[in-house]
Length: 568
Image (cartoon, rainbow, N blue to C red; front, side, top):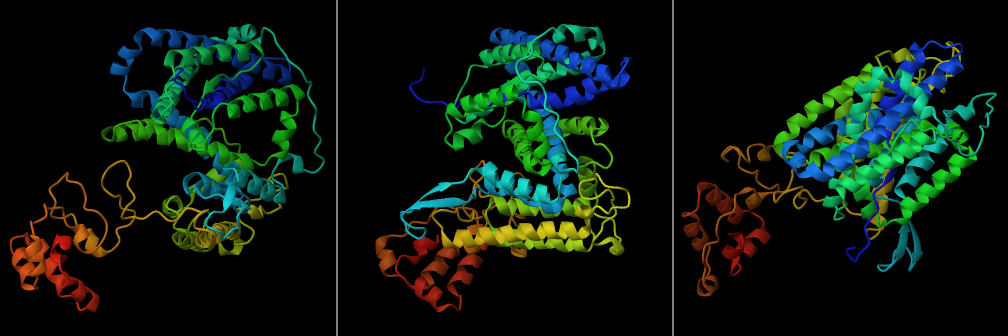
């Protein structure tokens, strides 16, 4: 229509609604319904889930049609934060915390897999393969390995080394399910039990449509506008088709368009995704794929999208409303931790517990690691990872202090949680956490070496003085020196902070004083002092210090013609 290619919107399972459906509808029905056997309870719970999904599809279509007529009025009445914060709440819980919890239950297996998410997606550093011209040639051609491959490969290898996936259990046998297509009336059979769950169904439907709107705004800001009402209606149609085929989960467009666009994707990636899922679904091998895949392998990949939901929420909300964003997320956290989704002793449960002990210090260490990873300052990452290793060894974080359990840890059940109560769970010991942080420091050393050896292939550090984020003023990453602490003390409240730097870069800009070429040619050291008398005292002190510097280079520059013009 517009004479150019668009990046297709990512489309698939409504993961945002899937978790609440499982734990607040289907699990409740399974535990409360009266039936002759456990299998019948599960069947009834599935039917209720399919019926609820059918209702969500109908509501999505209705909301899409309504939006076509009243969309403009809704945009003027409903704040965008009210439509996006609920999605961010689910993103930060079910798609983020729940997915990385297993990484903290087995830090040696999970930390690297998790950290490669930050390295590749936020530090934008990926391994490359040189294909032409030689690695050291200025015109070398190379291809980047996919971001997800770093996380999946490391997580799969280390996860199997610790025997974390179900298929690693002794005596494991896969029960092959029937293949083919199923269609039936399950979406009608579940209506007998649906009355108690409207409080979950309607918010999920509204959240799905709000999620569509959030994704559409995200795509619009990335340069690809899509029709709003049409997207909502077709999401509803896809959800109805899924319900007719027995799916308790709907289909939606989801967060990720800007990242796909940045990677150069058009529409083929979405088409191939659909073909792959149809093939896997019809073959009946999805179950065995789940059984052989460690959670530390796939969890960080889903975690990325949870983070992106929160990012997009704050990015599309005015800064003055950010307090409302964070307050609104509280309710998503309460829903998650009140759902009892973690089975005691499971990877998810232990991971949450390990993230809780010493949470203030853990937050400080991981925040610093993430900040410096995004800025590609690998030496700082190395230092903070060592601090994390030291805190783990001293048992300030992740474990209660008990130095007798440094190598064994306090948990039992074996590394995979399937052993007896007499088998230590070494994977959660302070020693294992120390190794996990040391592995991150090792990755930082490798990234620093690659950055130094091949500067054209691996992006260089972000410069504090020039990096800008959403405005004209450079953003501070660190205070720098104690001299910077008082740099803004004399500024009026509400004025922008001074840029980071040294010398005159801390001073607010002033119009340059006119200096004629004749005056420049007859330059003397008395002239800048005379001119400085007409400037504010801060400029006077700075100019005097600059000219009186003992550095011979400084004095030589001060005597150069035109120097005062450059200083001012």
